[in-house]
Length: 236
Image (tube, rainbow, N blue to C red; front, side, top):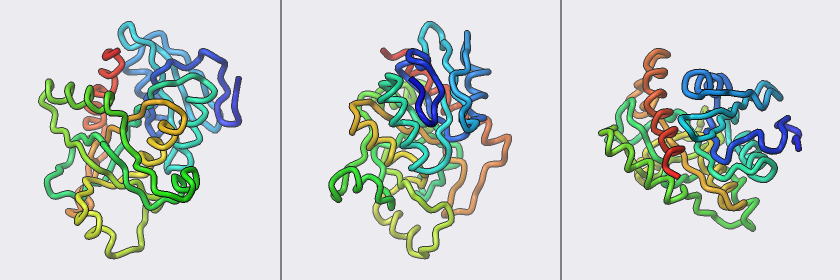
């Protein structure tokens, strides 16, 4: 049954879905890494695909930018299309001095300035956490491949252009590794509806150092993250 945002049929999506923010990155992943690919969504040009990675059926779909957009797609994928595992793959801006460009971050938890989780949790603070089994598997794969990976808390913000001059210092004080815009909402949706979720991020910028990857470097760095995420499809 289609929804207002996903025009697909029951069974079109696999039980595991990779979630890049950019729909064109979803197309890139489908074209480069999957076989027997079928496009299963084009509504609002938010492309979704299902195919095979080895013998494992897997889907990939864009979610757009920001927590409201990500939450809509995560909610509909879980509740209408039977997706059980949601793996966000995206970029982030590091703020921790120990984190370098190209590092991969596994978001164990996600603090946030958004009010959306409180709205769903009776006005109280919800601890937005990754699924432990997905987190454990991703960390294990990264260690086996000697990838530069960090595990810790990230900050999901509603504001790309933040106006609080004290924000960076505050986040650093509390040990936040990086800033991004979707993980807190994704973790809440998964917990609320009985799914598993993990956010895997590539450090494309270092906010504190004013360092940034160019387009070619981003592509190379994102491939490492994508391949790590796809290994989770083989862990069942």
